[in-house]
Image 1 (cartoon, rainbow, N blue to C red):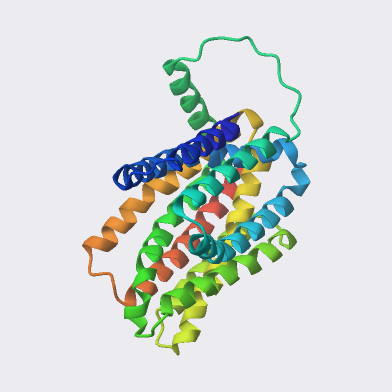
Image 2 (image 1 turned 90 degrees about the vertical axis):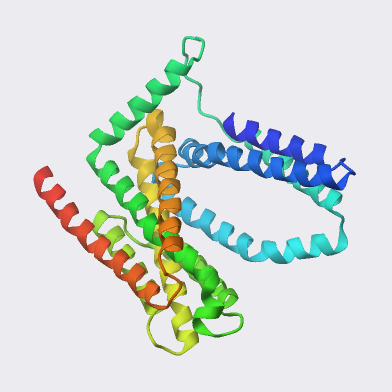
Length: 323
């Protein structure tokens, strides 16, 4: 229902905006639409991850997530070209109509997804108290599931370093003194993500392996700060995205397979919320400090490496206590 509602709202909004002819109103409407879509995305993203367990067998979730990530990365590479062609040969109004159409198609596809037999529940009015109660129950569940809690903590915390890394990337042309450096780095990153998605389902998923993947991703970032030939330095992003993609696929797969269905949505929402919370902190720090320099790649990479090593030690202690 969440996915269908968000798709329907966004589709109707794009459709309505496509009929606006006044330029000033169009600008205001587009800003409003972006805000609404951002809010809708906040609801639909965890819902999309949560619904996977209803339509995909547990043992197939890693493979599904790997294939999904592969498709998403290919689309992310192709979409700028497609968008350019659409804007070249179609008006803004036609583009909005096309956007609305994609939302309506998504709405229909979700409506036809196979559904589990609904549980019989007593119908009652949903109140603000229920919302806070659900949040409290979700946090309590995460706290008591130590492995999930640790995984969530690692995945969210490491986002601090990668947010700083993403802040630095747009300055690549200036940092490397190479025209088109930023575009090349992004392209190599996309290739790394595609390759990572291709091999992710062939790897075993354990805490030790996940943390080792983070370490290797940190090495990729570190490479970008070394005094190497530019294109060799650029390849650090390929290495980074390759291992980060595998890490992300297995993290979400573990959450989807180990968390009870009743709590899955709340756990996923917590992951996304914590990840978003770290981003402004990291980017604010990068803005405040004189961070636009090559050494920042070294510091960020070293931070990821040290964090993964520290997490390895903590994971071993947790494992020994469990035994």
